[in-house]
Length: 271
Image (cartoon, rainbow, N blue to C red; front, side, top):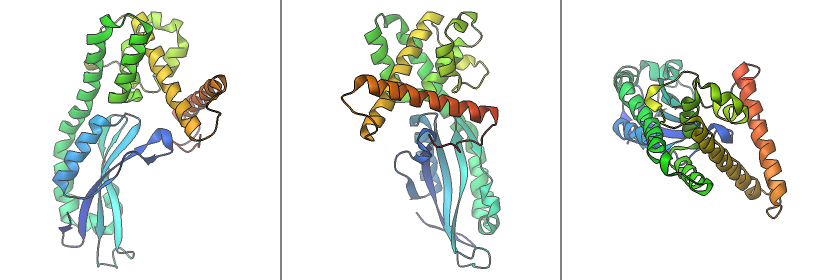
């Protein structure tokens, strides 16, 4: 839907970028939307997309005011969901056109500001639902096969990053968790660092570690599939595939550690 403003014609878009895949598009972009359509699509994707995916609502425009925009076209992000947290973007202020277009700089921005709290609750509700399902099902997961199948289903529904964040939250502050540094290291990059009771899981440390092991195995299987599809490993060489997947997973962790320490800018390393 094309809107006709005082300075430009514009429509809204919703896009998503996978931070684990060099910011490639995650799903198909939705374009030429009204603001109401864009907000509904953004809300839907905030719930469905993994935490590692950045979801963006923005605006495209065309203008005849070449004195304000020589190219005659432009775009700016207005709202982002990054690592499960919503924030408004002020990129529109960098555009002479959008900053002067009251339907964007005033009307749209005010509406998104009013809706931000509700949309944040939508995202948080997805994380809380993930934690609740783990709590409700943990007692019935009495074999490795059941645990693996369950965590595979959870990863498919909520994304591995959201699942990791819930498990890390459950382990936070437990001294018994220190004995499995391999798993706590695996989980920590998805954790905010502050315990949140809304995402509590009613399970003991041993059960949480069992879920984390299954989730890590799922993660490695996903990496293996990508390596095979890319032709980087021989699909018949099971040991070679696993060794390569472990190496890639280790490199991803090293990359995240460098970002966290400030040694490199976010997502500037190609893995």
